[in-house]
Image (cartoon, rainbow, N blue to C red; front, side, top):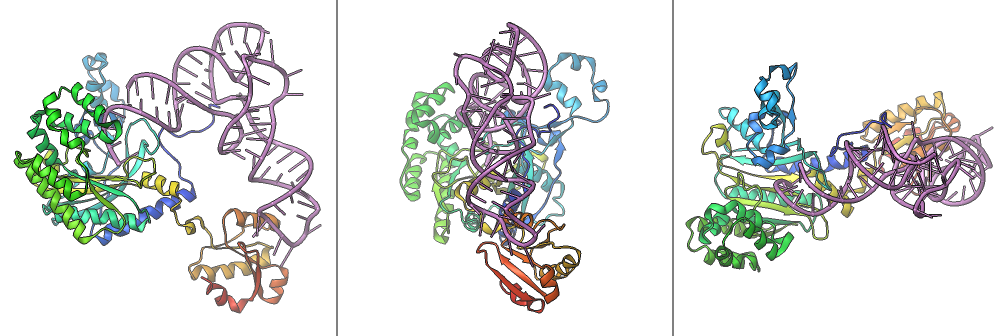
Length: 458
RNA sequence: GUGGUUGUAGCUCAGCUGGUUAGAGUGCUUGAUUGUGGUUCAAGAGGUCGCCGGUUCGAACCCGGUCUUCCACCCCA
């Protein structure tokens, strides 16, 4: 079976039906992005390695797909490096390019390179595939689409509010009700670390805390202990584990917990503004919930942190995430440009919609009308008819060869065509055509000059 | 990257402690039905049992490797 072709691990082919469903999501998302005033950009599939390396942590570097140099690249490596057999020192010499790992870092690079052409605040959206050398699982692929909307050059918290409304608008359009948008603030996490005396262990503390809903309080404490966080700190952090109630109640609890931290207090203030403003404006289908354990992407988020959970009952990781990063372009030499953005996990949203059966049925229909083929003279008349149907905006086609009627009808059936048009010898003589409704099994004969009556059915 | 799991017809899956020509359902082709599909009936085609190697008189089944699938870590959309 060595002859059988295959595709690489974690990649997928998309059938016509799948592409139509994916485009349905893409189109709705794009429309809302544009409605909210975002502009599209695109960046290359691969970047210079130094643009990507070191931006996602050690773990991230490992997951970046590297592209080998062209030509006889091994001969250019010096003997010492070559014989050391260390990937970390050899890789930079034989690979200078790497596949895009996410859309945020290339966007930061874009902003820096085009800073003199861009009118700030700059609202951009970007829908492109990214690649990760990860081990695939359900909803985790090595090639998948990201779909980001970011605002750079605007410090106002109103941007956060608008992005939350954008999330809500998209999920409403997709008829995906019951999503939960979890929100937190990096400053609150930093403040907590400060008041419990674990300031220098912020990352270990939050990474462990992030797992609360997965491994429970005991699991989190065990992990914190392993990371060397003191018992006293954990005790001080105790209220976090039992934080509950409405958003406002949680805000009150956080305020008192963080009274000793200036940064923490600022985080609570920001969170309060965002939550209150969103509640004032109202959301259509999503639920906004404060979740202090949320700590994703700590690498560059500095303010708000978002994550979207699928409706309850659907087994799926987060279907979106985002937050504010005050100094993303700093790594490329442009200081003091604030950014805030959100991302949609399109591949996962697809799986969720599929599981819930939320795709519109009309998507399955790739053809509205099929003309059966009864021979050359009949086909010619049918083609003339098709031209008019297509002009009217219908998806119409002629069966390409004169085959058995059974076979042609079966084809129409398999393709979910709702109407079949028959123009045979009789109809040719009468100057008419017969329309068969494939769902009801009924037939109706029209004169050629009554075509408008048929088109009017749409 | 660590540990485990999966692979048999286009698809979904049976296949006993290793033993002759590897099965079912569905789909496909043909016919009943040469101008009528989705129902029914009949016949037919389709598999070097993921791939490579080993053990054995004999391997879909046991062993090793490899690829793939899914799962738990890691991390993340």
